[in-house]
Every structure is written in structure tokens, then in C-alpha cells.
Image 1 (cartoon, helix red, strand yellow):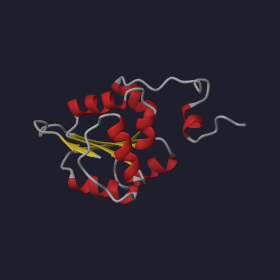
Image 2 (tube, rainbow, N blue to C red):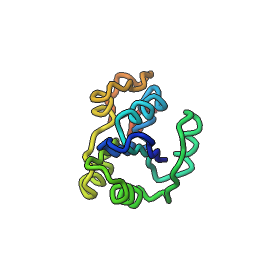
Image 3 (cartoon, rainbow, N blue to C red):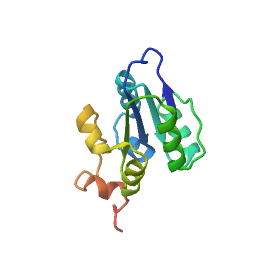
Length: 142
């Protein structure tokens, strides 16, 4: 999912967020809306394009760009086709960090991005667990 923002030609950031990161925010549509205020391009990436499409539709997030599902190729394509000096990738796994490192993206965890952008992270019954534990599914244990 990507949004090319009309009127933001001078913005210097391309932002890509993994679907897993987006699921951590209490209001994903507000995250995208806020990012659209200061980014030239915004994308949601995942290995499953139908999952991204369903998530975007469920949260009333504009859907423009299709991708093939290979996160590496998608991130490389976004990096080489968006003419911004900064490319920021928000993810949750070590694999996401590896993609960012190899493809020359700045990397932020979903929590770091939430702190920097003042986005709310979803509060739920898993509150006592670390962000990483919630993401990799260590809860519940039984």
C-alpha cells in the first residue's frame, strides 16, 4: 500500500511500515494520516498483499500501490523509485532491521516510531509483556 502525496513534493521522507508494526497502533488510520502530513510517500508492506489490502480497507486507509509480496523486493523497489533523501522503515523483527540495513533504509521499531511521532500503541491485556514478546506471539503460553 502506498500513497503518493499531492502537494508534498518538497517533503524529504519516504516512510514504509510493516503490517505487524501497523497492528501495534491503536489507530492505524491516524498513523497514516499523520505520516501523510510530513512524508512524501507512505507504504505498508508485508509478505501477504491480501492481508495489507484487508487491513487497509478495515481501517479506511487509502490503497494505491500493489506489490508482489516479497518484502525485500518491495522495499528495494520503493527505495529506488522514490526520490526522497530519507527512507525510514518501521518494523518489528530482526529480519526487518536486516532489510533496512542492506537496502540503505533508516530503521525504527514500532515503539521508537510511536515515541518520536506521538502515535498511540494499542493497549490490551498483554500490557505486562514486552513489545517483542507481544509481536512474536509468546503470549499466551497455554
